[in-house]
Image (cartoon, rainbow, N blue to C red; front, side, top):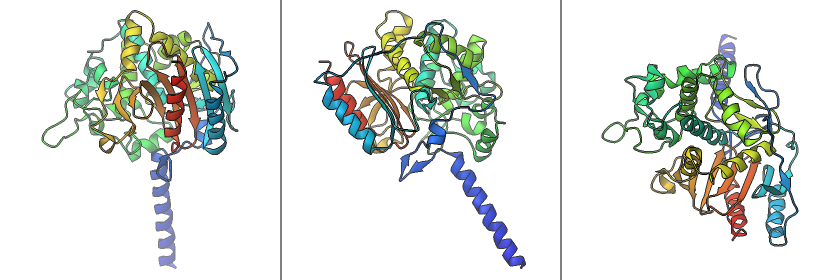
Length: 391
């Protein structure tokens, strides 16, 4: 009887450990990143998450029917929506939605999680802070977060962090940096993100073959850099991240509906991927980024830099832990797509994407949401051919 009880106890413990391990990182399916509906389409969130508001000047999305030249691509998207784990897809030309489609349970009223597309939202809020003279691209992390003084992460500048080049310890296989204990605390709502980025385990310099990595030396995709940027912006602006995000991004982009932003109880934003909006507001974000990239002045310059390669993503696909089809990285934006040239991408776990043409006169854009990431090359092919129609 004792052995039976011991065996049951050990089985229960092993099950608990396995469960904690599974929920400590984002899920996968057959080796591909997976975003289950209960994550992708969470509608209420937790009580301490921020509730975002519609803009004082919400933008109306124009819509039109596809032209004869566009119809074959629309038909291809319809086919993909019918045969792939897609939840939403939109084809945009300029400020006009040419085609959009949802697969249930997704719909135009569902608050939709962008996962790491939220990093690109973070980038725009950082750019606004720089252009408001709240901080500089050369500002070091330790200047705004004194707890990082003397640590590897403290020497990283805003520019380094935007390029995922802090030089610090690599993250988990899903790019998160939580320890198992921190992941459990995050799930319970007791984790302070400031404690994460100032943890010696996370803040120490990554060791290379012969010496420690220096900030700016190489890109290493992980949550440390964008989470720290959010904390730095809050310090620099003197307001919670969610308030700055509302004023600097959601209001100027013309958000037409409320949404959610993931944060801890101390109001530190989950700036590695906390943005949740209706799909139409994700489209409005994409349109605003494209419009801003054509403007003169500080923010226009920043956005153009954000959408262009600022650092190489390894020496080739075999050398890339993340972004296998991207040769470069801008400011929290992926660049140099090997299938769709002259495009930049906001990219989220499980197949969440916004693709922009980076040609000055090309206004084509695609937006997609998905449960599994394994069909993204076909999305890039759609973007490649969609952009060609502008020529």
